[in-house]
Length: 119
Image (cartoon, rainbow, N blue to C red; front, side, top):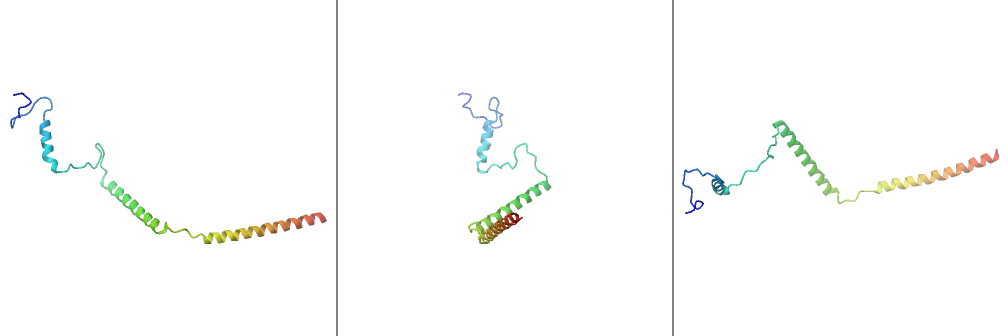
């Protein structure tokens, strides 16, 4: 029988290359039914203290609330065209006043020229 074909006897510690690999694989196979716990932090990361964690959580919750409010506002008012009638009315009034001021300036210039011509 070859050396690699032998099964290790119970209680005997393996030695040599790959020592313990069979035991690790056996444990892994036995635990396949259980999901592996996920790491919450990167390896080497420092966990935040309680106060900092509460502050971060409250910032996250307020940002989420703002996002929900903005999404609701967008859904409600985003489809409606803005009411431009008031702005169009003011534009029309401004243009009328501009024409009237232009006409008055033209008359005053004519009167000034006529006055200077008489002098």
